[in-house]
Length: 396
Image (tube, rainbow, N blue to C red):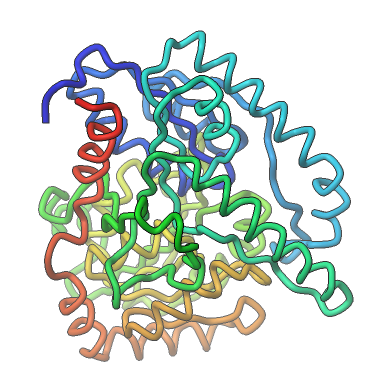
């Protein structure tokens, strides 16, 4: 691919958690290699992550959900805190994005799940490449707010769906049917289906490019007769901290035939592991893909990117979705249906149950066989296909 020399590409990933920013960065890296100038706009957790990757970043007004002490999405508090403020904040985002795009003299915009940057780009006459895995976000339902949830779901289906449709091209970093992971969130209206392309996973590093597993395992002191579990607990702080508190004493007490490396998902955290029992815990893993390649089992939330990466690396997973998070429930259920993971509710977590589940999964060959069946074709070519789509909409 040639022709990006001197192009100025504006990236605007959603800043809630790290999944959106982390799949934007590999595309930005390839564009920068091809000569493009890059500027990021994001907020909350996304800012620290993008800066850590060496990119200039401007901060947009944040929009987020509220969580209770278990990490669950608190619909009542989200409605109070964001419902009234959401529209003015959204408009501030649009105005801020217009200002940043004009100052950067952008040639094109790559939005990951952000409507405000799509609207800003269209007002400026800029082409937009949209990346997302939820065409219609699912609303968590509470019994005492059932009608509110139904009304909100209907409004979001209409308004957000139309908003996504303003993009010139819509890329979904998921597997083609019938392997699609985020199928529950992809109710795409007919008028927009011609813009949509499923491109496979966006991988910063492919398995064949990762460090040798034996070297990584030796670095963490894992012997040949031990099983290595990688617990990468990511997402917004309010969602990951309750699970970290539950899992830490469990993994510390695992038998010696296991070693568990746990990342607390903090981009500014220390990468030096602290060991207690069978657990090595750290704030941030410098190269999680080397560890992902070397491990025997993954324990994670139900975030789309984390699960896609685990599948592409051929790793069976224990998925613990954020409570009352419909998208993560859907992802976890789908991965279990595909035979590559087992899903467990956070309320059911205890030491003996997690250990038994790990033993069963590591002793069952059907997981390996199903992962091998899924990993055919070009399921990890999302970066290249994103570059091709961007070149097409800016007519290179």
